[in-house]
Amino acid sequence: MLFNACDYDGEQVIATAQPEFLQPALAELQSLCSALTVVEELGPGIALCAVPAMRRLLRQAMEHPPVFVRHLAPAQAIVELRGTIEDDCARLALALATLPEFAWLGPGQYFAVQARLLPPAKQPPVRSLAYTSGQLNQKLASVISEETRAIESIRKPRIVLSIALTAERGFVGISLAEENLSSWPGGERHFARLPEQISRAELKLLEALEVFNLTLPTEGEALDLGAAPGGWTRLLLQAGLHVVAVDPAALAPALHEEARLRLEHKRCSAEVYLAEALHRSRRFAVITNDMRMDARDAARLLVRAADLLRGDGFVLSVLKLPHATKHIQPLPVLREALAILQGTYAIVKARQLFHNRQEVTVVAGSPRQSRLFAGRHRSRAEAWGAQRGLPLLTRHDSAETGSRESDR
Picture (cartoon, rainbow, N blue to C red):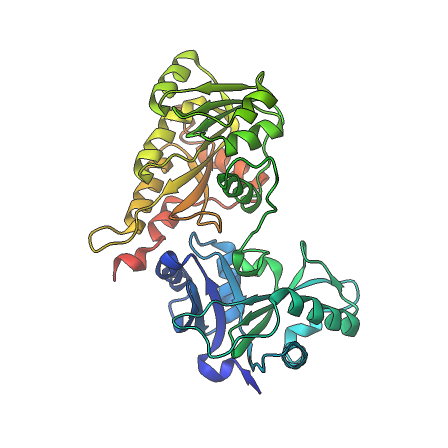
């Protein structure tokens, strides 16, 4: 049986966030559409929402990227599932074919089917599906390609056919890839584990570079704060940079063996090294930070590091947030940290990435080095961001982040 999602209450969209940050994510969406309501929590960090105009919300989220929402997908129809791949593939294909956006698919159009099995929200389902999301993707893509002569492109689709599956229901919708905020199902960007990988932290840097559309320079110097055991340092070295890795702890031995001429390991605190580097007037093309410290303290440290950044350089930092308790909320901490950074940098973007845990990742550039540049700073910052296709997160934007959460 097929239900039109509009039969429930307006049009519908599925929002995905890290489970602990689902409420801030919903608050961000409500700041874009005050009429948004939560219909149902489909799984941890996954909410089915009703909005008056789904396509308008997707566009607004593109223009004003949220921090905590990882992925959006239209839910234009709901299909009752039987549990077998033959039956369910036929039902889902029919549901997709009845959507007006199905006409987007045609000869030469690049598309991807993105099915994902949603974890149960509260208790295990009575039955489970007898197939995987990958099997369904492959079968549906074959059917649609044969019918429309569109070309399947898993990595770089233009059109995405989203399918979110519980044990009993399939939520389907069609969108342009950029409308989903992430080109990966649910915003879950997975990387192959390589033999040379030193730590899981490498995945955070790889995802950040991809999400923020950044490319590491192939020459110059990089400063890696909180470097041990050396995952980010390895990627910076791999790009061709000379790296100053700051951490009292030891680095992986392989780093010294592979790049001893391009690696300086400073076994001291970040504060001590920054004082030394400022005294020596060093300049870095990239400054990275993944230290375990309060987000506001990390922001203050990066403010001190601003004079070490080249004019065309950028800072990429993780900001650790506290777990929500009765007395502590992560959102005010994040707003304070962003405000500290904005006094010195143009904050280009802040996102809670799939490989982040209780933290967000921030990219910043164009340091405000003196009052002489105060009047020209905005244009410089805009040019810096425009070269990378990134919108600026202004003071107003950061103040808006999670503002509704503080009202609860």
